[in-house]
Image 1 (cartoon, rainbow, N blue to C red):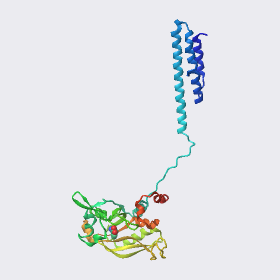
Image 2: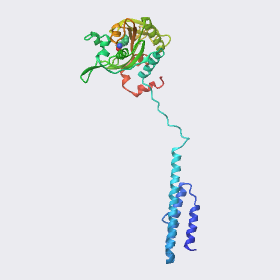
Image 3: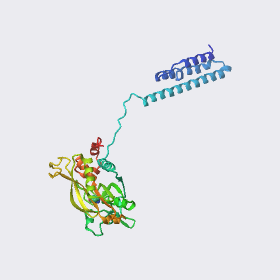
Image 4: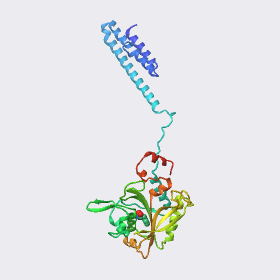
Amino acid sequence: MDIKQKVENLQSEIEKFEISNKEQLESFRIKFIGSKGALKELFSELKNVPNELKKTAGNIINSLKQQTEELYSAKKEALEMAYEKKESLDFSRPGEPVEIGANHPISLVRSEIISIFERIGYTVSEGPEIEDDWHNFSALNFPPEHPARDMQDTFFVEQGRQEMALRTHTSSVQVRVMENSTPPIRTISPGRVYRNEAISARAHCFFHQVEGLYIDKDVSFADLKQTLLYFAKELFGEKAQIRLRPSYFPFTEPSAEVDVSCTICSGKGCNVCKYTGWLEILGCGMVDPNVLEACGIDSEEFTGFAFGMGIERIAQLKYRVNDLRLYSENDLRFLKQFKSAH
Ligand code: PHE
């Protein structure tokens, strides 16, 4: 058999060889390409070929070698790809569990308060946390040097050459709303506020408030009471009752402190309400005419009421969390407990 014939036989053998897995691929390599393979053997037979035919014989063996190697790499690549595909697209694999976070209790309570007031037509307004004296104090009927300023220990900061305050309440936002709109006004202002207090379980240097404001013709104290009763029932349940105790704020007259019937003992007396049956939840009052005038609203034509509450305080009552520091420590063991709350 001459060498040409041998090359043709080998070629058809190569073409027929089945390669459908890695083992077959490896046998193919050993059988045809490897150092003891059929191609090597053919090359070694070249020495028996007469000189004048050597060049042509060499060429055809070489081109078969090239073909074989190309076939080998193509098959190898195809097998690797199929393997990888199988790896990445295993539809029978159970899904990776998705980690669902939890809303912060302050956010939960804030959203709930907002939605209760939105249902009776209140809009949400926001303002800056760094405030000037006018919006935090003066417009709210705190004259300079008025001792009432001491009620709210203020952090002062320099902004440019101006002395500014970190707002001590979100009443400052309501001043801005009154300055920039005409009654009827019905708005709530949720936000973070700051007071210079030593941090303990019962006090913090910042906390969150929602304050509300309603201004229109003929707004009365009865409207205020009814609004707050509706709010307490929505938040704490149909059985909730409220009571008002006289109080003092520079920006409201008359002013009151509002208690809700104890959410734990329903008024019978327990250690949470200190056996009084009542829990204090907010401050409120009729907007002082001086405040309306300072904000450009005619106090002869319009009256209004305002109220303000601490979100942490409400969260404390709802979730029985008694240490205020927990709300800002970001301890996952605490935060994870609110996963099912909404
Ligand atoms: N601004 C008061 C505070 O921060 C709360 C309040 C608001 C009281 C509106 C009465 C009316 O303590």
